Length: 309
Ligand code: CP
Ligand code: NVA
Image (tube, rainbow, N blue to C red; front, side, top):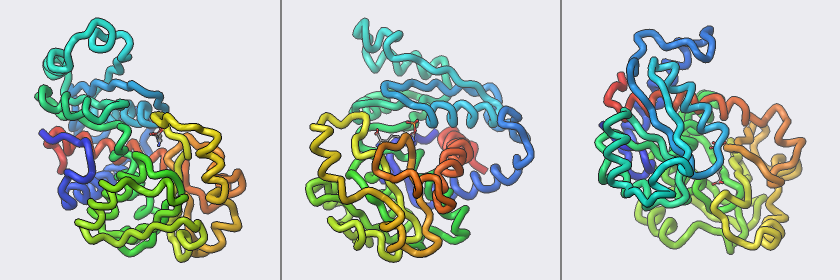
C-alpha cells in the first residue's frame, strides 16, 4: 500500500507509471458510459471513504466516478456529522475505524498536519484531495492533460503559472522537479513562493524563474496555468490582495506574448483572474482538464492499493 499526499515524496518513476496507466485506461474505455466498469474491475469490492473539510465539486465527483469505474464503491463523510470534530474523538480512533471499514481514504483538509496524523494511524492508504500546502491529484492530472494535448513529454515544454503562490502552485513546482520541466512563475513580488519552497527549488537545482512582470513570465509559454487569487484557506484582506494582482489578469493581450498555440489551464473554480474571452477561447482546455481527473485518479487509486499494472 502507498499513500499519496505530496508529489515531492513520490518517486518520479512512480508518477510516470501512473500517467502511463491512465492513458491506457482512458483509451480503453472511449466508448463506455461514465458509470460502466473497466474490464476486469480491478477494485471490485473496495471501498473509498472520502471526507471534505472544505467545499469541492470536481474532486468529489471525479473520485466518485474513478472508484466506480474500477468496480468499487465510495462513501462520503461529512466532518460535521462525525465524532471527530464535534465529540472530540481522536484522529487515532477515527483512523482505526476507517481502516476497518474502508480500503482507501481521500481527505480534503484545512490542516496539513491532519494528513500526517491520519497517516500515522491508518492501515489503508490516504490520498490528499487538497490541503493548504498542496493539491497533488490535480497537478498530476494536469501533467496528463498537457501531454495529451501537446503530444510531447512535458519536459520539452515551457510552463507558466500566473497567480498566487498557493497549494496548486506548490504542487506544480514539485511536478516541475519530478518531470523536469521549465517553469516560470508570474506574480507580484509580495506573493512569491515561501522561503521554504525557494530553498527546495534551489536544492533541486530546477529551472524555475520568478517574475513580477506577467509579460516576462508568459514569453514563449506553451501552457499558462492560473488559479483563483483568493484560495479557500486565505485569511487575507481580499480587496487589497485582488488589487495587488490587478496587472496579472490573463487576457488576450497577455496571451499574445506566449506561443501561438499556447493553451490555458485552470483547476477551477475560477475568479476574476482570467477574462471571459480567454477562458472560453479555443486555446482554453479547462473542461478537458477537469474530465481527466477521473482517469488519473483511477490510476492513483490503483497505485495506492498496489494494483497498478
Ligand atoms: N479543482 C478542484 O479541486 O475543484 P474542486 O474544489 O471543485 O474539487
Ligand atoms: N487554490 C485553490 C484551489 C481550489 C481547487 C484553493 O485552495 O481554494
